[in-house]
Amino acid sequence: MAYQFDQTQRIVILGGGPGGYEAALAGARLGAEVTLVERNGVGGSAVLTDVVPSKSLIATAEAAGAISQAAELGVQFFTRDKSGTAAVPEVAINLAAVNKRLLGLAAQQSEDMRRTLLDAGVRLVVGDGRLDGPNAVIVSAGGVDFEHLAADTIVVSVGASPRILSNAKPDGERILTWTQLYSLHEIPEHLIVVGSGVTGAEFAAAYRALGAQVTLVSSRDTVLPGEDADAAALIEGVFKRNGMTVLSQSRADRVQRKGDRVIVTLSDGRTVEGSHCLMAVGSVPNTAGIGLEEAGVQLAESGHIRVNRVARTSVPNIYAAGDCTTYVPLASVASMQGRTAVFHAMGDIVNPPEQRNITSNVFTNPEIATVGWSQREIEEGVMSGRIYKVPLSENPRAKMMGVTEGFVKLFARADSGTIIGGVIVAPKASELIYAVAQAVTNRRTVDQLAQTFPVYPSLMGSVADAARAMHIVLQ
Ligand SMILES: Cc1cc2nc3c(=O)[nH]c(=O)nc-3n(C[C@H](O)[C@H](O)[C@H](O)COP(=O)(O)OP(=O)(O)OC[C@H]3O[C@@H](n4cnc5c(N)ncnc54)[C@H](O)[C@@H]3O)c2cc1C
Image (cartoon, rainbow, N blue to C red; front, side, top):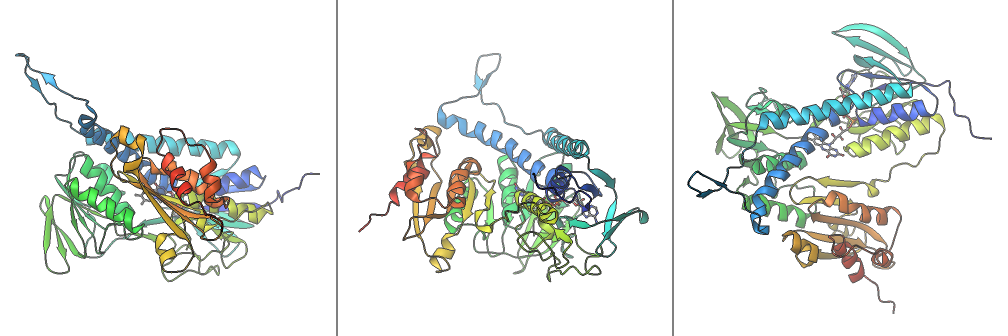
C-alpha cells in the first residue's frame, strides 16, 4: 500500500519567490491544504527584479558583444551610400525596448507561475504576511489586517532586499539599486558600479558591452573576491581590456547627486564623477517585523533565519527557505530548500541539499561556473586534493569559435581520484559545469569522467582532457 501523507495539514507559506513557490507546489502535490501569501507577484524578486531581468539584459549584452566580435571571424557589416561607398553601421542599443522586453518576460513568467499554483490547488492571498505565534499568519494590506490563517506548518520564504547605505541613498533616477535599473530609457553615459561581487560584476560587464562607460569600484584587491582566484583575475583582465575602469582597494564612502551627475567619494578622498551609480553592496533579509522572534524563531545577527539542512528553524513546525535564511543565496537553492521543507513537514523522503554539490555561475563574458570544494580550501588544507587546469586556448572548438580565454579546472582526491570540485571559465560555462556537478554529486572518479565521450570538437572536451590528465598511476 502506498504511504499516505498527512493530507489534513494546513501549510501557510510567506513569500512566492522560488522558495515559496516550490514549497507550495510540493505541498499541493502531496495533498496538503496550501495557502501562499505574497505581497508583490508570484516568482518573487528572482523573477521580477533579479534573475530573470538581469539574465535577459545579459542576453542582449551578449548579442551586442557577438556583433562587435564577429569581424574576427570574418563577418563584415556595412552599408553603402548612394555613391556605393561602404560605411560601417553603428551598433546602437534601444534600452527602452530592451527593458520593455525583459520586464515583459518577467511578468509573463510570474503569470505562468501564478497559473501553475492555482491549477495545483494552492490558494493565493495577496498581502503582507506576518506570524501570529507559531501556528498562525496574519495578512494585511495598507496596514489593515484582513485575514487570519491557522497553520500546522509555516514556511517563511520572504527573500531579501538591496542593502541601502545611509550616505548613498538611491533616488531611483541616478543613484540606483539593481531593482531600479530597468526604468532607464537610455544607456548611461558613465555608470559607476559600487560593489564588485557577483551582482556588481555582472551589471558592470553587461552595461560595458551595451556601450556605457563603466567604472567598477571595488573595496577588495580584485573583483569577484568570493570566486576562484584565477577566474577572478581573468575576468578583471577582460574588464580592463574592454575599457572598463576598475578601482581596486577603493571603498566608496558617499554617493551624491549633483544635477544630472553623480559623485562617488572614496574613503581616501578621491572622487569619481559619472552620470549614474549602481549600488551593488549586498542584500538584507526581509525578516524584520514579521513576528519571527515573537514566535520563537532564532535569527542570526545579520537577521537571516537559522535553519538546519532540512530547512527547519528553531521552532519545529516553522521552516524557512531561500535568501532569508543562513544558507546559500541562490534561486536554485531556495527552490530546493522550499521542497525539502515541505517533504520533511509531510513525512516524505527528504534528500537534504548538500552544500558541496551546489553549482553557481557568474554571468560575465566569459562566464565563471563553480561546483564543490575550491582551490583555496585545498591549498589551505581544509580538504586534501589535487588540482589540474587546462587552458581553453588548447581546445580545438574554442579556436574555431575565436575563444582565446578561459579554462577548465578540476579538483580530485589525491588517493582515490574522486572528483571533489571544479571551475569552468568559458562561454556558457553555466551549461558545461553540469558534467562536473554530476561527477561531484555522484562521487565519480577522474577515470570515470574521462571515459565519458565528449563530442569532438567541443568545449566539453577540455573537461575530459583535464580528467584524463589526472589519471592516477597505481604503484
Ligand atoms: C541581480 C541579481 C541576479 C541574480 N541572479 C541569479 C542567478 O542567475 N541565479 C541564481 O540562482 N540566483 C540569482 N540571484 C539570487 C536569487 O535572486 C535569489 O537567490 C532568489 O530570489 C531567492 O529566492 P527567495 O524565494 O528566497 O526570495 P525572493 O525571490 O526574494 O522572493 C521573496 C518573496 O517574498 C515576498 N515577501 C517578502 N516579505 C513578505 C511578506 N511579509 N509577506 C508576503 N510576501 C512577502 C516578496 O515580495 C518576494 O516576492 C540573483 C540575485 C540578484 C540580486
